[in-house]
Amino acid sequence: MSLTIGEIYPHFTLNARGNAKVDKKDYDGAISDFTLALQTKPDYAYALNGRGNAYRRKYDLDKAIQDY
Image (tube, rainbow, N blue to C red; front, side):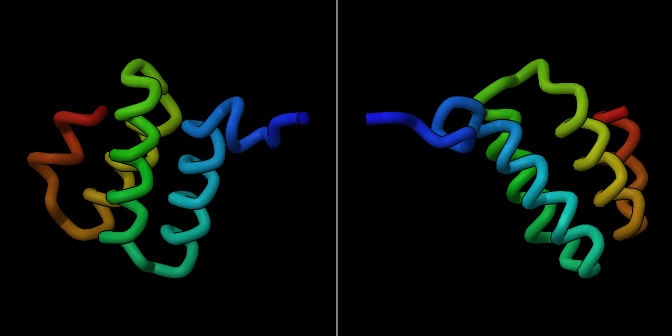
């Protein structure tokens, strides 16, 4: 049985989904996906940056700064 890329690298898939949600202006959904990505790989800089950007677009600047 072969694994999918999402099973091998779930943080990558969750980050991509978060980016898609940011594009659709679903910032809460994006933050949720970026947070899940960080739970699977806590040092994943792309998810931290993406979540920071989503917080910034919601004007939650304190949380954005924490992620940056």
